[in-house]
Picture 1 (cartoon, one colour):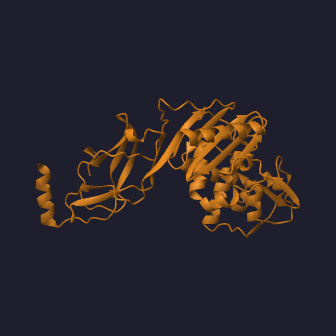
Picture 2 (cartoon, helix red, strand yellow):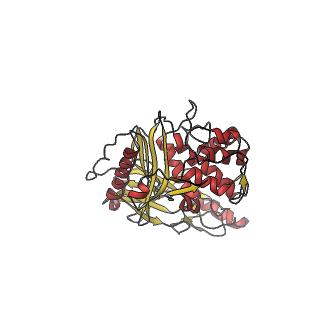
Length: 382
């Protein structure tokens, strides 16, 4: 099948797209607020769009933000049945003796997986992180390999993990951009676990109550997660997410001067996104978008759609400028399988393509009989 594309103009539509991979600005939108941090990223969740960033690709130490990936891998183990929430895990000497923040588990006293998740996510317990890592992979080292495999799958190209806790290591690093990918993936892939755990303000284990260090959970009712981190070398870090009327933004702030500053700077970013940008659902997953010509098939027309919901995230007032064009493959020849990529829908702003989404077949189309193929072969010559 030819991979050349033939552009077919779509009737003028104010169509807006979902996955803009670059920052779009408008003349009347102010620049992002200046932040006193080493790096930051502000991302629209629905549109998967980075609205603002500073040193987003610079290598940084993730500190306890590492535990987002630890949780992601554990959630995967729960989903595939390798682990159960009610299951008890042993506490090793390594987990018990680890330095840094703890939930205060003890050796020879097995702990329920769900308690360990609470201790890791809310209390940022390094001991809980190691106990979970050992429960999933037998050793923290093997678990770190699983973390790196997931990072690669998620497209976190500048991330490498050495442990499940975030304790400093020269080969343990990430970027603000990669952390935004991870935060988005965790919310998208495990929404029930995110909702159940990340907004809890405090947790008690072993008669010790510890607060969630994410101050925004108290300051902004729309903030429902995610994770803090801190070491002397990393500074104070916070990934936060807020949901206002169905719109979600994710803020990644790294290297603030203190606990208060990371919360204040994160709030500035979130407010900036909600105030100056808007997102619209344009197409739902599996919604018919356009019909294209099919050759040598039992049907000559094929309806197309998109694999996922399509949102647009743009500065307020920019929607009317966005147009869409269908680019179908030059010769779409049967047989066609449902879900097969048969073209693209390109979205332009001021005559510049800002993103493309694959168009996929909504149904199977079988090949035509011998004579049908002959007739279409002759037609294709002209």
